[in-house]
Length: 344
Length: 197
Image (cartoon, rainbow over all chains, first blue to last red; front, side, top):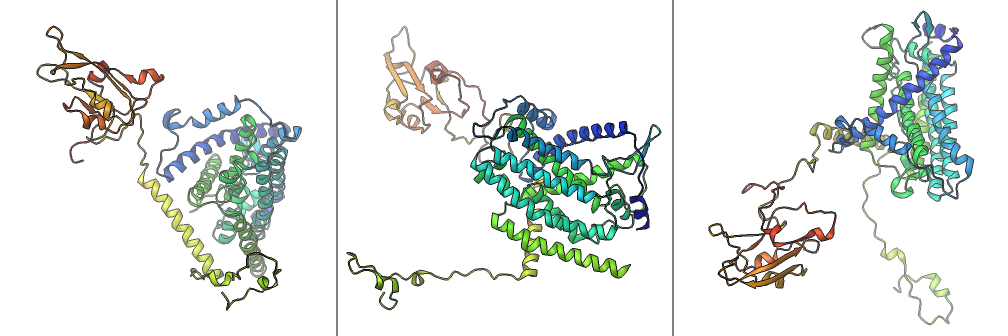
């Protein structure tokens, strides 16, 4: 804990051009990761269901996301006559903005010396990491809400209302699940939390918190079994019913980026970030690869759950969120707090 | 049901033409046996266990591998009795057509898709083994329902159902198969199942 405490207050100076370069690199990485997740999900879902998944475009169908994106981007940018002008155009960009901004939070390793300059392998290392995350996921909700409302369609509106209720309900539990870890690590900096896991990853002592965070993460990203927002069968497509072409691609991109963000935060907070077990200390350049592998594992969990569980009914979603998840998260926080006080 | 008088029915105005029979829903409702409601902890454990069981089931599918047949490249072999596109036959020794233009197939056809125009065989122009032959023999495959009645009706086994089912085309008129097309040795595009397979 002492190491974590000291590292959390280290504020090192980064030149402005490094900040800009990092912003571009992180956006580029995010942009490259999303198609990979897309094709992986479709292939894996296929295998889970005894199918091949896409296998026509390119070798093993690996170019399918490229074809999809090309198709979407070359489509006509249409707008329903009932849509509310500017908001309709703005809403998808809000979704992307918040997703990328949250992605900047994920630490990929300790600061490295690249060409003699000390560079932190993350977008920002704010001293209020989880708060930053929840602030942006709260804004992300505007992307969905405004998109659904400004479409001027009842399906979109219903989807947006569901999304609003769902995000509010599950954000509480998600935040509370992190509070336990913050108590244990005694820092709000995500790099500090990673360093605090040097002895043991928090997935072991905070297993309940891990489960709650993951389940709430499924709900936050509107993924199965909590994808009531989209519920194709009843809502046609939910908040993005009226969106097509590039705007739909924006929502799609944001959704998968959000999955990656939740995977990244789970990795950072519960799975020890770039730390390896058994006292392995690889050189610094290995850190991002370790983080990516752990993120891939959590993303696999997302897909596995999606292939397995059917969509919840709306009342089940609400009662699960408020009557099961929230009390459990509160209990987890309380027990952790008592233990931290008792053991210190 | 006089033993369960409905209080609402008694208060109904007497002017009602049809007597309101006192229907008590309580009589018709049958209690259905439900599974025992597990307590909080046991319910949570059951939900967790069932989720784990589901996850194991889906993961097992990955181990099994896909059961998809990549259709245009791979095909499911058809059974020998499969009723696909028709074939007209010739005698193998003489090369004469088996069809004698009797039009029994056209009569048997429920979809009315066979057209036969018969002509007399002459010593100079002997086409079939019988007295007459089919000068025109057309099957409109866009109408055919592949029932196989033509095959049953034919007294000379001149027409049989083949195995070809890939019959799509860009033009409806291309689906009217003439005698030459039906007589021609068809491209075997369909794998055939072996005997007893």
